[in-house]
Length: 142
Image (cartoon, rainbow, N blue to C red; front, side, top):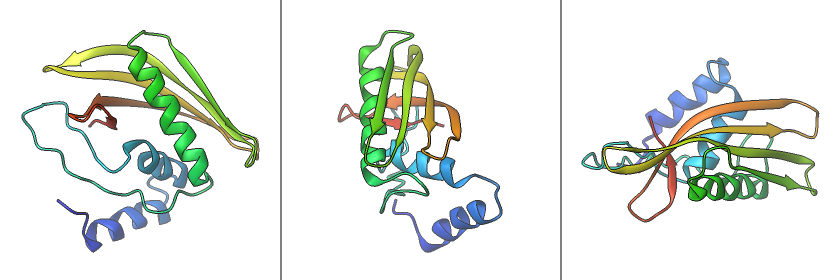
């Protein structure tokens, strides 16, 4: 299912009205890498593609470093694994910590704490659930 204009308008409105922060919107875009994975393997993936050109105050390179850190922590399958990331070009950094690895209805999943520290000094933590897709990549799960 492709994201329609109505969905994009809705998400843009959420950011505009501050129902979600631009940073959270950017993180959703960055980490989902184009798909929202549902924890039930029998449920079809939505193909929820938000990743277009980077997000709010994180560059495309920041996003890639963040995605890589998240995947490394999840791939470890070891609770407490923390993978830092840093971009000297933008001054942004952070870390991805696997809080708990588990299986949900036959699908490998993990609860993650992701911290994003921006060059301006603001640090934002996010707690998100990820599940592994059929192709071995990770996506944000509901």
